[in-house]
Image (cartoon, rainbow over all chains, first blue to last red; front, side, top):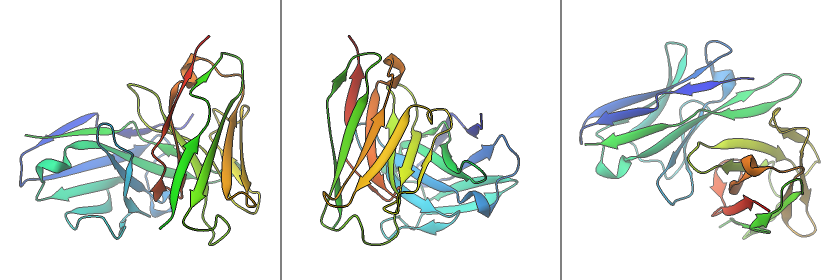
Length: 112
Length: 114
């Protein structure tokens, strides 16, 4: 059973910068895992932020960026706003005989 | 703009089959080469990818659910559906349908209880 691991929680000050990471139990995350990032606030539907490692949707604020960092997928928020307080989930693709996607456990980001 | 809406029973008995439908509006389910997916979130837990289907009939499923899941696309009705058999309380969750993870339905709560 593949496991995708994220930091359970992080805290950042308004205006600060924070990086969330996403690791795979199978080894280093590469672009071939097509990392996606989603934001979910309480009572709301998840919102897609990043696809294929670093590509932004038309609605993704410029302060969000995706990358690969030290064998992990990463989501960096620069100039954090109070409204960025939310849960963030990464999603990785696993190819092979039974292609499937796996979500990370999520990171609860607190802006304080 | 394309919108998705889940529908189906909010309560399912243990051992029965959970059946949900996602209706696509504002566009044809046949246009483009999108995947049509189901994702769920149990209370107090994170998101779980269930599986996806294409209008070609191709499907991929979460290996841990594969033996119980069927996802299908009905182009004539502009809908896609989820069937999850032999449900238990662990299948209680908010179920979301999505187009490629980009467009999401509002989600529907399904409770498994006798």
